[in-house]
Structure formats: structure tokens, C-alpha cells
Image 1 (tube, one colour):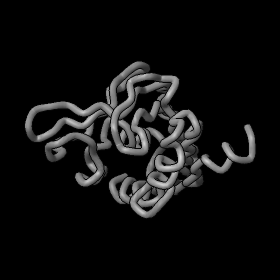
Image 2: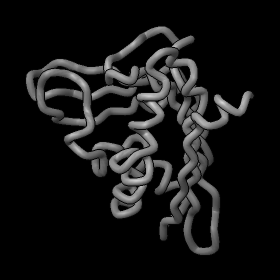
Image 3: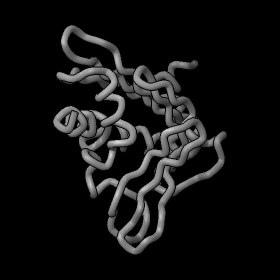
Amino acid sequence: MTAQTADLVVRRSVTVATTPEKAFRVFTTGMDSWWPRSHHVGSSALKEQVVEPRVGGRCYGLLEDGSQADWGRVLAWEPPRRVVIGWHLTGEWKYDADPAHASEVEVRFLPAGSGTKVELVHRNIERHGVTAAKVHAGVSAEGGWGSLLELFAKAA
């Protein structure tokens, strides 16, 4: 990893007052309970956020018009410890199905006293090529992973 690609890694964490099992469940199959409706791709409003609970599972938004807008794939599914999702959105927030162009979001759920520390690392952003800087700016800025983890923490 070069200094330039190391700069494109986003690390965020939050501690929640619940078990790793519940934190994992809320983050993954319960994502719709905390994911903001403003954060979606597609031309219609977001009705439901879906993460299919298995390796190879789709991550997508079910839209109000009945269409589905893919945004990722489950690469690792290890409840209640870890999930890895391939992030298939470009810097223009368009879906790119090619796994060679997808970054990875790894989330770990670690026991921490009477709660759970949730550590998120969004890596390999350079795989997005010419839109990598835009992807990094979007997921690291206000409204990105830090804000999303705050919403998750309230739901967990």
C-alpha cells in the first residue's frame, strides 16, 4: 500500500450498549431501521434498505416505484463478529458491477465491557479509479460513515 492509497482508507468506530449479536443484526439485516432515506441510488425514493444475509448476498435499495438499486455485495458473513461488503458505487454514485472496481467495507463487532465496539474500515477505495477521490470524499465527509455510525448507534 502506498502513501497515496493509504490516504484513501476511512476508519470509524462507535461503542454501543448492546451485545455483539444484536449490534451485528441491527447493522446488517436491520440496516433499514437506521439508514437515512436520503442515502440511496436510483430515480425513485427509498422504501427499504436490504442486505441479504449470506456471502454473495446483494445489498440494495428497494425503491418506491418497485425497482431495486444495487449498491454492494456481501463478501464475508461471520455473525456476530464481522461482515465485509463490496462497495460498488462510483464517485458519481452509480452502480458498477465489476468486483475489480469495488472497494470494501469491513465492520467488526468486538465485546467491550457491557457493550460492543463497532469498528468500520472502508478500504481499497483506489479500485474506483478516476472516481476514487470522490468516493473517499463522500464516505469520509459529513453524512458519510461517521454520521451513519451515529445513526446506527441510536438504533442499536
